Length: 577
Image 1 (tube, helix red, strand yellow):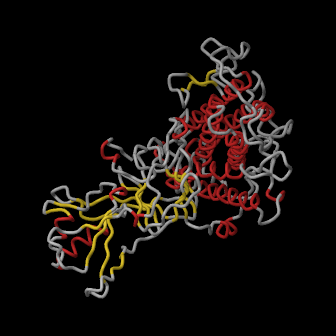
Image 2: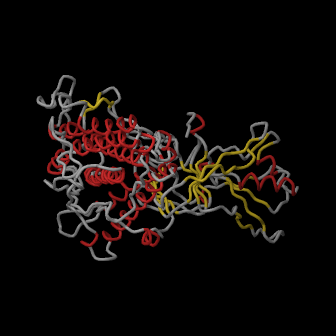
Image 3: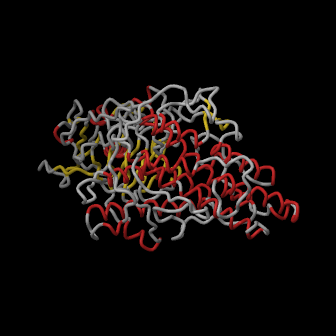
């Protein structure tokens, strides 16, 4: 078969998207199976290759959009059934889903193998990715000559994924495709990252995403470093192999994931089957969001990237479950869940789970938005302004270390910086350490304010140039003062301040706590904490539930001394995000 017309070219570019995606699950399974604190160098290599495969898929989709096509992700045959042959390859080997192991890495090396010099382009039945992309390149050049660039590159430029569509943290760059030159540039980026500059070089022209002082090698050679437990260094060649610094590879420091798992391996309703369905639903949701992002709604890509870290958490949850054979554990199967079946799978309880030294895991389709204080001309906070909603998938992960490049979402930076997220906050109920704020005159009033200083996020709603809450309480028999005090307390995001009303307005001392009616939501406060409202359940890293409260502020800068709560440190360190 040859690429003979624009329809054929569009078909092959859709194949390219699917080919690139077929490598995602194997890389993710191997990466997720590595236990924390082990194989750091190998994990960095796998992560860097995966990130670049995502870039390659994005570039292929940009080319397809540029020629008037429509990238498809959300369909049953898009996800391969593993073990799988690479789509439209010569079917010389199958790709498994398995743990980080020598056989799995050897298979990855097979499909990342550079093409032999002089190998012919192959638009079907290819041996290497390079041959397949050479055929697409030839098709682009030939059709540009036959049709003219204006007719070939007829797509809407607004459908291009750009650098500002999301904060791509890997090596290489996103290229907007508008003509033959930019299309060939995008293909060159794909081929060089996979194979190196040329047939005589191991280097791909980029810098290492984790160590910017180092040059990077192509995927084939990068994976070869894991086999040898040694990095390439300047002067090394394909023939010499890596001769640089050594690193440890511990094939046993992994979750012993059952190879090529399927949800049908487990009884319906069992822990493993339920967890698998949750993972597969989340992954299918992400593909659905990506389809929208690549078809005219590029802003949705931000939401799909935000869900990637939660996928890792769901996968690790799976790997902590036995498979039932007495030897292996369960693992993600990457099976497609149709849109009409995702709603039922996503009706889980709204909950925030704190990962040990990691992100906040958000489950149950909790709304996410941005808020910021509104200030007076005297820099006094007056009220809250909701800026915008942030699009998310039902499950996502929010940064807790303060170093993510995709704030507010987690991007895995906590592992890179060895974040210490140890929770130090008092676990006793708030009622046990609240203090009543009473004015010195003990004014007769049916209003009583309580304070828990250990929860204070220093949002500054409790005072202004006329005085503070304690001073105001001396005149709280004045209804105007009462109204101002109540407004101040209700705008306190952390819930450090609460108030009670004597509902009978007599001397019976029958005080009842009153809380503002707040939505079940999470607000990202500009340059500040996460504001959790609406009695959302929060679980500590040890799995123990925290006291459910209507208002909670969670640290987002990573430096609070009262984790997981905010203590105002973000103001001292000039945190931004």
